[in-house]
Image (cartoon, rainbow, N blue to C red; front, side):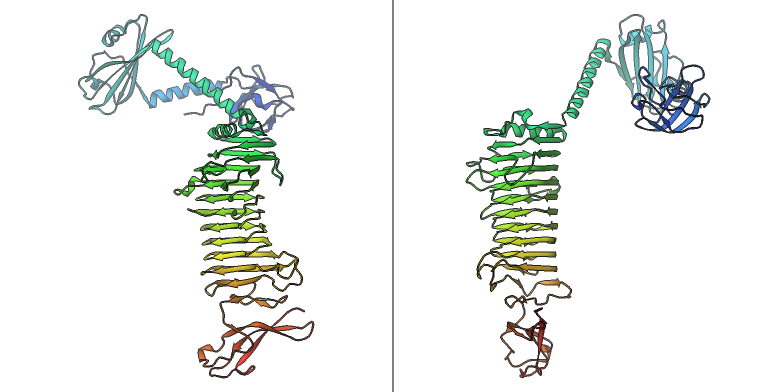
Length: 614
């Protein structure tokens, strides 16, 4: 079939914006919105000399891939010449050709048949014939149709020559269809099922009117939804004065935008919330801004509600974004603040969840994630959770978790990551917490440019995890010699670690208890430029990292050394300093050179020295 191009009601026209010659294939119009989208046809000019053109693309006011003289002669036209989507000879010719093609390819046009002719007289496929008014009577009588002046159209659909025949008879007059009847047969010789009335004129008009009304209402609803794509919580009754309970209003607003996928704007103010806010799929919630004192503040008063109820719950959802909001716990009871809760089954029920510039303060877990795929926190703040957590991720399957420029302070554990896959922490800071980063049974976690300040127990605590650290800063705290006692890094239980650069900086002087590093004997990995975990010396107080190795004070005195002991290293627990500035060194251990009972330095033991840099 030939291509037919959409027409345009009333053929609104525009004009050429510039003069064109007979060869130009890019044409600029004054108002391109008045002509149909490409591909289509346009007529330049208004009399018998008009030129029909074809255009393959339209961008704003320009037509591209133009075929000149599609009908009529290609010629030059001056700026201001009328251009419109008029009915063309091509349109009429194409309609005729396509109809003839349908008739010849899909429909058998056959002579009129009698109403009592058996199914076998009809050809296989679709056949059609019409009856004049005078020839209609027998068909009207057979089906029981009443009415005058009706012409008849008979359509027969036949699957094979032996069975499965369906026939439909339509009665029409000047007003349109008056009634439709049908009959069927599974025999080639007789019609086995009697005539059945499908619809009458009154029924047809009623159904048509209902369908038209429904279509109109659906169109109106769709338009309204598009216009209302971004909604304001105050449209739903939220006040934001910190006194009136805004829970029901904000929840209603969330449901409204969630139903069709949209954005909800929460203006600056303090909103009193007394129950959990539920978030479903396909919604964006944006506040006025989140500062340490708050701009769009959601204050939660939930004491007395079940402690399993969080402040904000995202459950069985995808494509959710929360931005520029401050979540504050005003109750005495500790519960989860923001919970990205994927339940305990299909992890894909929660996916593509993002938080930007969100503050969460005063909760047992300020941010909590479980059973979720692809979730990110960017420039978020978690604080004052007391004996609990800033960021907590554990439970079910957690994969592709990102924390980027996030901060946590005054927590038991600032960042707790457990049983996750492919987690990344970028430039995050744990401040004044017992443990900065606790990583448990994590499969592939990367930390880049992170820091911990004032850790009471451990800056990074790793248990049975695979961790890559690219640059980490541990900053002590205090004003006396007992201030810096936290461990920079503690790794145990078959953890696998790969570290490129740990820097320790203390605020306390004198610095007799600077932070240390502790590794279990079953920990493997790579440090800095070595190919194994080697001891690291901290010259400020002479403390060492011991990788589960033996150590002693001064030259070992044990006996019974075997040949398999040759090459073994025993580390010095009280490093011995020597040399003069700037070539001072420290003896940090001894390497066995012989078997037997001898323990002579230089003969049986080789002292291991490292420059201290001072």
